Image 1 (cartoon, helix red, strand yellow):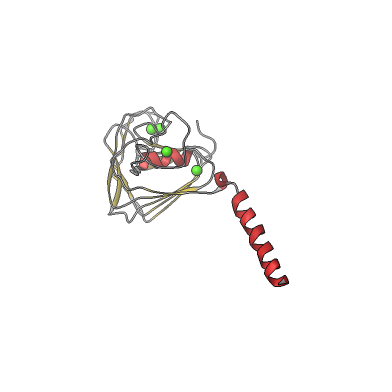
Image 2: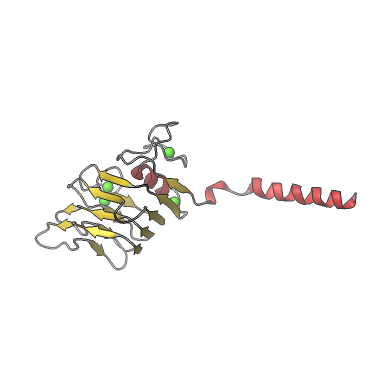
Length: 194
Ligand SMILES: [Ca+2]
Ligand SMILES: [Ca+2]
Ligand SMILES: [Ca+2]
Ligand SMILES: [Ca+2]
Protein backbone atom coordinates (compact mmCIF):
# COMPACT_ATOMS: atom_id res chain seq x y z
CA UNK A 1 0.00 0.00 0.00
CA UNK A 2 2.79 2.39 0.90
CA UNK A 3 4.64 1.60 -2.33
CA UNK A 4 1.47 2.33 -4.26
CA UNK A 5 1.14 5.69 -2.49
CA UNK A 6 4.81 6.55 -3.15
CA UNK A 7 4.47 5.77 -6.86
CA UNK A 8 1.31 7.82 -7.06
CA UNK A 9 3.12 10.80 -5.53
CA UNK A 10 5.99 10.42 -8.00
CA UNK A 11 3.57 10.42 -10.91
CA UNK A 12 1.92 13.57 -9.57
CA UNK A 13 5.26 15.39 -9.18
CA UNK A 14 6.34 14.33 -12.70
CA UNK A 15 3.04 15.54 -14.14
CA UNK A 16 3.40 18.92 -12.46
CA UNK A 17 6.92 19.30 -13.84
CA UNK A 18 5.76 18.57 -17.37
CA UNK A 19 2.79 20.91 -17.20
CA UNK A 20 4.74 23.80 -15.68
CA UNK A 21 7.65 23.64 -18.17
CA UNK A 22 7.55 26.84 -20.24
CA UNK A 23 6.73 25.94 -23.83
CA UNK A 24 8.31 29.17 -25.13
CA UNK A 25 11.76 27.89 -24.08
CA UNK A 26 11.65 24.88 -26.41
CA UNK A 27 13.42 24.99 -29.73
CA UNK A 28 11.20 23.88 -32.59
CA UNK A 29 11.64 21.98 -35.84
CA UNK A 30 9.83 23.42 -38.82
CA UNK A 31 9.43 20.96 -41.69
CA UNK A 32 9.03 22.73 -45.01
CA UNK A 33 6.52 20.95 -47.26
CA UNK A 34 5.89 23.69 -49.84
CA UNK A 35 8.62 25.02 -52.14
CA UNK A 36 6.91 28.28 -53.13
CA UNK A 37 8.04 31.58 -51.59
CA UNK A 38 5.15 32.73 -49.39
CA UNK A 39 5.00 34.44 -46.00
CA UNK A 40 3.63 33.02 -42.78
CA UNK A 41 -0.06 33.54 -42.08
CA UNK A 42 0.75 35.60 -39.02
CA UNK A 43 2.76 38.12 -40.97
CA UNK A 44 2.29 41.52 -39.36
CA UNK A 45 0.85 40.02 -36.21
CA UNK A 46 2.02 37.84 -33.36
CA UNK A 47 3.74 34.69 -34.58
CA UNK A 48 2.13 31.57 -33.19
CA UNK A 49 4.90 28.98 -33.52
CA UNK A 50 3.11 27.29 -36.42
CA UNK A 51 4.59 27.49 -39.91
CA UNK A 52 1.77 27.78 -42.43
CA UNK A 53 0.88 30.24 -45.17
CA UNK A 54 -2.83 30.30 -44.31
CA UNK A 55 -4.09 29.41 -40.85
CA UNK A 56 -5.09 25.77 -40.94
CA UNK A 57 -3.72 24.90 -44.39
CA UNK A 58 -0.54 23.20 -43.10
CA UNK A 59 1.57 24.57 -45.97
CA UNK A 60 4.98 25.47 -44.56
CA UNK A 61 7.37 27.42 -46.82
CA UNK A 62 11.00 28.28 -46.14
CA UNK A 63 10.24 32.00 -45.75
CA UNK A 64 7.40 31.29 -43.32
CA UNK A 65 9.62 28.91 -41.34
CA UNK A 66 12.34 31.56 -41.04
CA UNK A 67 9.76 34.13 -39.94
CA UNK A 68 8.67 31.80 -37.16
CA UNK A 69 12.25 30.85 -36.27
CA UNK A 70 13.29 34.53 -36.14
CA UNK A 71 10.51 35.19 -33.65
CA UNK A 72 12.20 33.30 -30.79
CA UNK A 73 15.79 33.28 -29.52
CA UNK A 74 15.88 29.47 -29.28
CA UNK A 75 17.92 27.71 -31.96
CA UNK A 76 15.24 26.17 -34.15
CA UNK A 77 15.72 23.67 -36.95
CA UNK A 78 14.28 24.05 -40.45
CA UNK A 79 14.22 20.88 -42.53
CA UNK A 80 13.84 21.25 -46.29
CA UNK A 81 12.59 18.65 -48.77
CA UNK A 82 13.94 17.86 -52.21
CA UNK A 83 13.17 20.58 -54.70
CA UNK A 84 13.95 24.09 -55.83
CA UNK A 85 12.90 27.16 -53.88
CA UNK A 86 13.05 30.39 -55.91
CA UNK A 87 13.13 33.52 -53.77
CA UNK A 88 10.85 36.32 -54.90
CA UNK A 89 11.38 40.03 -54.30
CA UNK A 90 14.01 42.70 -54.63
CA UNK A 91 17.01 43.75 -52.58
CA UNK A 92 16.91 46.21 -49.72
CA UNK A 93 14.72 44.25 -47.30
CA UNK A 94 16.21 43.08 -44.00
CA UNK A 95 12.99 41.87 -42.37
CA UNK A 96 12.60 38.64 -44.36
CA UNK A 97 9.63 40.02 -46.24
CA UNK A 98 11.05 39.25 -49.66
CA UNK A 99 14.24 38.83 -51.67
CA UNK A 100 17.06 37.48 -49.55
CA UNK A 101 16.25 35.29 -46.55
CA UNK A 102 17.02 37.40 -43.47
CA UNK A 103 18.07 35.20 -40.55
CA UNK A 104 18.43 37.09 -37.28
CA UNK A 105 18.41 34.31 -34.67
CA UNK A 106 20.34 31.08 -34.18
CA UNK A 107 19.26 28.44 -36.68
CA UNK A 108 19.99 25.02 -38.16
CA UNK A 109 18.94 24.87 -41.82
CA UNK A 110 19.25 21.50 -43.51
CA UNK A 111 18.22 19.95 -46.79
CA UNK A 112 18.47 16.50 -48.35
CA UNK A 113 21.70 17.00 -50.33
CA UNK A 114 23.49 19.65 -52.33
CA UNK A 115 22.01 18.31 -55.53
CA UNK A 116 18.47 17.73 -54.33
CA UNK A 117 17.64 20.79 -52.21
CA UNK A 118 18.24 24.10 -53.98
CA UNK A 119 17.63 27.63 -52.73
CA UNK A 120 18.04 30.16 -55.51
CA UNK A 121 17.51 33.83 -56.12
CA UNK A 122 15.22 34.97 -58.91
CA UNK A 123 18.04 37.35 -59.87
CA UNK A 124 17.24 40.52 -57.92
CA UNK A 125 18.94 39.92 -54.58
CA UNK A 126 21.37 37.72 -52.68
CA UNK A 127 20.19 34.41 -51.21
CA UNK A 128 20.90 34.48 -47.45
CA UNK A 129 21.51 37.46 -45.16
CA UNK A 130 22.63 36.68 -41.59
CA UNK A 131 22.44 39.00 -38.62
CA UNK A 132 25.53 40.04 -36.74
CA UNK A 133 24.96 37.94 -33.63
CA UNK A 134 23.29 34.78 -34.90
CA UNK A 135 24.82 31.30 -34.99
CA UNK A 136 23.73 29.55 -38.18
CA UNK A 137 24.46 26.04 -39.45
CA UNK A 138 23.62 25.15 -43.05
CA UNK A 139 23.81 21.53 -44.20
CA UNK A 140 23.08 19.52 -47.34
CA UNK A 141 21.73 22.05 -49.83
CA UNK A 142 22.68 24.40 -52.64
CA UNK A 143 22.70 28.20 -52.58
CA UNK A 144 22.78 29.61 -56.03
CA UNK A 145 22.08 32.37 -58.56
CA UNK A 146 22.34 35.31 -56.14
CA UNK A 147 22.76 38.68 -57.85
CA UNK A 148 23.84 41.82 -56.11
CA UNK A 149 24.91 45.39 -56.76
CA UNK A 150 26.62 47.73 -54.29
CA UNK A 151 26.41 45.37 -51.34
CA UNK A 152 28.24 42.37 -49.89
CA UNK A 153 27.82 38.63 -50.41
CA UNK A 154 25.68 37.54 -53.35
CA UNK A 155 25.25 33.99 -52.04
CA UNK A 156 25.53 34.58 -48.30
CA UNK A 157 26.25 37.78 -46.37
CA UNK A 158 27.25 37.01 -42.80
CA UNK A 159 27.13 40.37 -41.03
CA UNK A 160 29.28 39.13 -38.15
CA UNK A 161 27.65 36.01 -36.71
CA UNK A 162 28.89 32.42 -36.59
CA UNK A 163 28.38 30.44 -39.79
CA UNK A 164 28.96 26.70 -40.29
CA UNK A 165 28.43 25.15 -43.72
CA UNK A 166 28.69 21.41 -44.46
CA UNK A 167 27.95 19.39 -47.59
CA UNK A 168 26.65 22.40 -49.49
CA UNK A 169 27.18 23.81 -52.97
CA UNK A 170 27.54 27.58 -53.39
CA UNK A 171 27.08 28.12 -57.12
CA UNK A 172 26.74 30.91 -59.67
CA UNK A 173 26.39 33.76 -57.21
CA UNK A 174 27.60 36.99 -58.79
CA UNK A 175 28.38 40.28 -57.12
CA UNK A 176 28.03 42.90 -59.83
CA UNK A 177 29.34 45.78 -57.72
CA UNK A 178 32.04 47.85 -59.34
CA UNK A 179 33.60 49.59 -56.38
CA UNK A 180 33.34 49.04 -52.63
CA UNK A 181 31.45 45.79 -52.15
CA UNK A 182 32.78 42.25 -51.75
CA UNK A 183 31.89 38.62 -51.90
CA UNK A 184 30.49 36.57 -54.78
CA UNK A 185 29.69 33.30 -52.98
CA UNK A 186 30.12 34.24 -49.32
CA UNK A 187 31.10 37.44 -47.56
CA UNK A 188 31.90 37.21 -43.86
CA UNK A 189 32.21 40.38 -41.89
CA UNK A 190 34.27 40.06 -38.73
CA UNK A 191 32.70 41.73 -35.74
CA UNK A 192 29.39 43.61 -35.46
CA UNK A 193 27.60 44.45 -38.67
CA UNK A 194 24.85 46.93 -39.52
CA1 LIG B 1 2.49 31.15 -38.03
CA1 LIG C 1 14.18 30.75 -32.94
CA1 LIG D 1 18.48 41.54 -46.49
CA1 LIG E 1 15.01 40.07 -47.49
